[in-house]
Amino acid sequence: MTITTDPDVIRHLSEVSVSVQIETADMTLNIGPQHPSTHGVLRLVAKVDGERAYDVQPVIGYMHRGYEKLAEVRTYPQVTALVNRIDWVSGFANEVPFMVAAERLMEIEVPERAQYIRLILSEMARISSHFVFMASYPLELGAATPLFFALRERERVLDLMESVTGGRFHPNFNRIGGVKPAAGSGSTQRKVVQDLPKGFLAETRVAMDEVLGAADQLEDLVAGNEIILARTKDIGVLPPEVAAAYGVSGPNLRASGVRYDIRKTDDYLPYDEFDFTVPVGENGDCWDRWYVRLAEIRESAKIIQQAIDGIPSGPLQAKVPKVIKVPSGEAYVAAENPKGEMGYYLVSDGGQGPYRLKIRSASFSNISFLPWILEGALVPDIIAIMGSLDFVLGDVDR
Amino acid sequence: MTASPPDTEQNDPEQDEAIELSPAEAFAAAVAAAIGGEVSPATRTAKVTVAPESWVDAVEKARDEFGLVYFSFLSAIDWASDVAVGDPLDGDVDERYEVLCTITELMEGKRVTIATNISKDEPRLDSLVSVFPGADWHEREAHEMFSIHFEGHPNLENLYLPEGFIGYPLQKSYPLLSREVKPWPGTVDVEAMPEKDEAAETDTGPSTENPEA
Image (cartoon, rainbow over all chains, first blue to last red; front, side, top):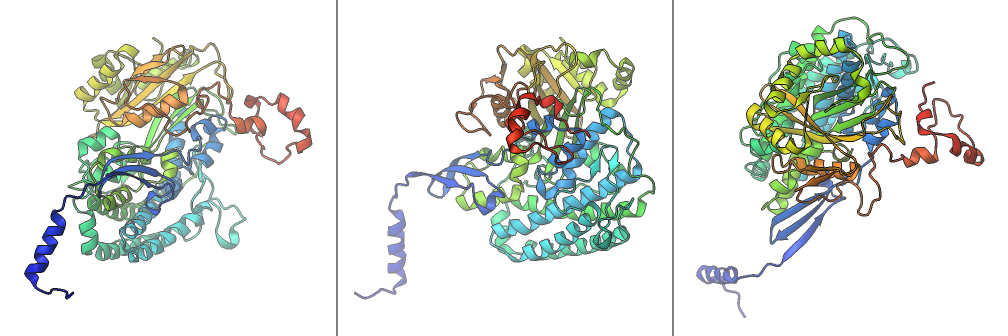
């Protein structure tokens, strides 16, 4: 038998083979809990018809640690160590709203220098968290190179945070009424010094210039890549009204065009003293979610440089009693964390620990609409959409 | 209807005055007037308490009239005198579950917490899923953690806990098992050796274990 090379015959044969009706059986596809794109242990039970998913149910709870219960048996200072393990990619930023909630109930004025240090470290946490996204998201789409650019700068930022707090991931640095007197780095590690390590501000200023440079490199590297654009443009479009009704927050909400940023609407930290914009997307697709985060890295770097220029001198701690007791009352304080709205509903009965602490974590609401958005998605797009939401399972399960 | 724990009501009347003036409280008062609820006095957050019968209507009305389109969270508080963990409340406790739902407006970030009190004998409340689809998971969590049944919820299964889990972990009467079998280590490691544990087990109430040294 000879193989035909006649184009007309080949075309005819190919048309015959696709015009045959193939009955596709429904299949249940189990994704995770151990899968690189799930950033932890998220499981998806996807019913697929051919290449399209028509019913996707996330299964969570593999990492449920019961922090809301644990907080009830701890004193206020001990809760700090708990809450920075919720979203471990930005541990410092998790501590701040809890502290502010307790401080508002206690009516404590935090010294300005401490507020500035909280603000600088919160923004550094945002940069490092967004760099993890910049590293992992292209990787999930098959591009390995951006990872090296993003993680190199993230390491720089984490080293600086470590020099102040002593911890890369779990700083445990906030205290009610201010921040911990910083530990020195290197040879002075054991000796408690009363302020930021020497040279920290100058080094951070230089590092922020490098962060801005890395952001430009990442944009060159990713934004011109046709494959990444094809995988992300118009994929996973999230309309703003759906995002709001599900409580989707942070960059995911802003990518849908909603200019809502708690840094602009609340005064939990003195963000009103700085000049920065809130980047928003236009279409609410995966590409916009990537681009909004890149723009936020740039804004955060600018905020940090302004804060370094304007940081006042003064104490790091307000006067607080030795045994912390929070007066009876309830307070809800939310912060604009890298992942979105991170809030604590703190109920105090006047004791040394919370009577009830509701932890409103961003990633929980940010993935609760997955069944909605994955309806009808192609199976490879499931990975592209999940990756673009930038969630952390510790932040989902608490 | 009381909206706050009884022990907070007697205290600090002059702080209530200060709270009335804050923009958040003024906004809460406007919402309360529109949806037929009360602003809670002794809290430092904008909380409006409504009757459980008008729960869904109140939230929907607040959403439509004040542009509170963003669903922040829904959760509950177990007000109880019998506590297995943590410190008990002072004074008499009005035993009830308080369900909270915080919703936000997205232009200026105005935020209000709508609350309602339901009895512990029959913890039932209408589901908010028809108003905010995001309430789905939050209600499942409140269901498995507090035993609150949300009428009309499409899929009220366990979210975090495995199937067949017995008990409702965030109820105040639910013991924290790890704390029962091993007391809090404290600031210095002076805990009893294993053979002495039997004696230690009987007299360690959870409320005495706060390690404030």
